[in-house]
Length: 232
Image (cartoon, rainbow, N blue to C red; front, side, top):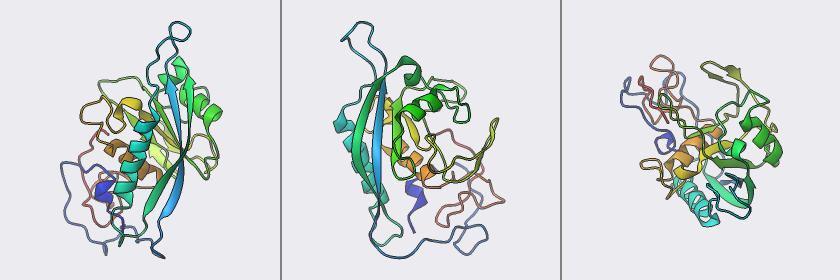
């Protein structure tokens, strides 16, 4: 089984040891040792230049995107005995200068939001390709969301209710603050692991505290369920 400890940020309070035989724990996927390869398309969204040909913010170098992909491959494929293993292949990069999209906030269910507009315009084959968008979401002191992902099944978000997007919906994918990529300028979030965390959600992994103590945490047997939410 792939270690969820490498993918989900663990909380500071645990509810007690949970083993793979406990109710609510996910059954390991089996069947072959070949890794599952996921094609990745980065959509680099930057600010608009003040003057034609002027400097923009957020135009991430391809080398930084390649480094993030390498980090994902190191985490998700590091144990040849684990099943399943995932590998990620960078198939391309798009670049767009748009102030509104660059400042997108989390609003996947609002068709008029900058997030949905950007994804609808830029997304490529979301049923087969992991689309990752880099931007600079607004900073909120009470909830400093620096990245987010869609789950591959219906999920509940406080204030928004239950969200569900078909696998071919352009909303599918991951949004990341460009400064939180591996080697970026956000201290504590530039280790590459925020990308790992969000890819975990994209693949269906919950937080360890998602259902608190009563319902098995992240439903994976190698991590304890948590009771204390940690902002990602």
